[in-house]
Image (tube, rainbow, N blue to C red; front, top):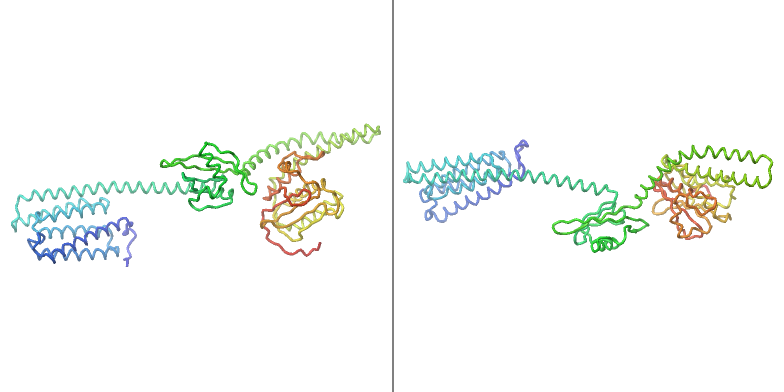
Length: 535
């Protein structure tokens, strides 16, 4: 049970623990004295001068040590008082035992060297010389008393003086060692704090790095792996997982790099179409060679390149709006005026060509200007089926499409988050593209809503010839088109608007004839209920 004391009375455990071990030594020493006196009596040199005094001092010493354990457990009185009391008790009791055993000739006084050394180390050098002075005074008084009232030799003062010098030497040495120990401990604590700070900084850097990072030792065991690497590789690991078994493809590139100094490829093809740029950096530690493997997500690289391209297109758009549309409007207006005049058929045909091309250029300008809308997204949550129904009616009327050509499937209500104007533009581009290539027969253009991997998806499917495999990778590149009168910006703008709203647009292999484009809404569906509107 601890006595309630101020916090200042309780030094750290590194003070109390050594004091406990020192008391174990004192307990052994006291027990040793009592045992010798009880078993062997006066047959030993210890207690030869005054056996009863030796027995009494030994028994008193044992009681004092046992009481010290009780006070240690209670942590009362405070640490400095307990240490001073124990060392003072040792000086008194061992001096009496030395006197009872014949004085300086018994060499019992040498045991005080252990107590002084322990006091110096436990107290970290404080008041150690004071204890040495007390021990020296006690030794001189004990020998002086023996000379005056006993048969001790005056010449033995030299031995007593040497013992006192030894007391001060041990005290000074303990004081010096304790000082260095304290400095070393402070340095170790600073280094420990630095290591903790460095480890925390390393953890934060690893956590927040956009690139995937794996640290591999000389045995090809994964020592560390950040969250970005887990997302790219689609797998988390335990400490010291083998690279060979966990990521065989990555291990093959790593082994080749260790052997030849370079990997067979710079881009690693991962699952689900992901790509990562590989980079290996060698590290050496304790004559062992490991490596840091960097995985740079190519999606982020492409996104950064896309941002640069969009910034350039934004500046271009402003120039186009001013420098191209104004003269283009003048040309178009002049052409319409010329068409009103009577002319031959050849002239009218040429004017129609001019007017058609001005309209086509104007459409390109409008499409390019749509890119500026990417950064002005205003998402809102709404029911997808309601919005798509309204869009289909508008699209049918605007493009003069027969009622049964466009079909809507997946009649459930899905709540999604998107900018309504952006989604209308995306659907218009996709449906216009599908209408261009479909057969325009009943149900040749299908819009299907559903769920995939717990996310809402919307498929726009036509019954045309589809997209050849070699062209699928270029579908969303700007100005890529297979149509003679296309601008090549419709799909590109649709993809940009989807990404601006946290969604994804991709070419989807539906297993049906024709082309299928899928919009995946990243906002999870929060409200699905059976549709009550009918077909």
